[in-house]
Image (cartoon, rainbow, N blue to C red; front, side, top):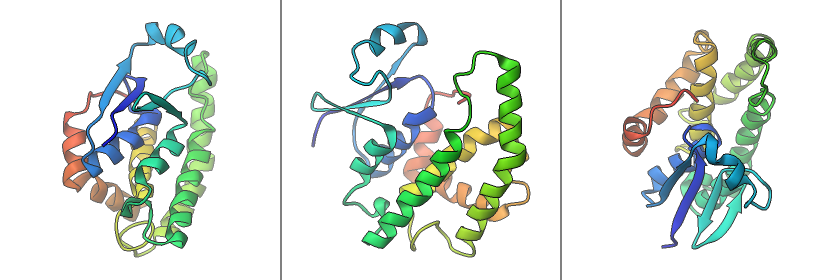
Amino acid sequence: MPNYKLIYFNMRGRAEIIRYIFAYLDIKYEDHRIEQADWPEVKSTLPFGKIPILEVDGFNLHQSLAIARYLAKNTDLAGKTELEQCQVDAIVDTLDDFMSRFPWAEKKQDIKNQMFNELLTYDGPHLLQDLDAYLGEKEWLVGNSVTWADFYWEICSTTLLVFKPDLLDIHPRLVTLRKKVQAIPAIADWIQRRPQTKL
């Protein structure tokens, strides 16, 4: 088993999908969380200047979703067939497209609030409607067992609910899917013991 070290801030953010996959697959790793004050120094040492980084036996991998795919590959979390794997990737990319539109690093709070509000009020409902229709009466988003697309939905929606608590009020099926992910023993255990952070 390789030696894994995950480097990110002390928050869920873009590293949480990696932590969920590690938890579910029962893979040991070092969860190295850096303080914002130390970031400029760390940033200067990274080839692309971004985190999360996953060190695999000292070799640096970057880009959270690429790392997640690497870890989920050859497990049922990726999807059981090539067709399912493509569907999983598509759902993850759809969610990430939306999450990437938020101005997370915007310094002016009034501008940030306005953009968040617009995205959650006008764009969010369309995405949720499409996602709800895609899920339909199925138990999981893709196939007949949990995949990392389900994990990513739970992670993204947890963050969005911080900003708009009533976001899922008219989507009980999507709420049920969140609860199903949270009830998986390995995920429930991680949620209980992870550091409590806003994002």
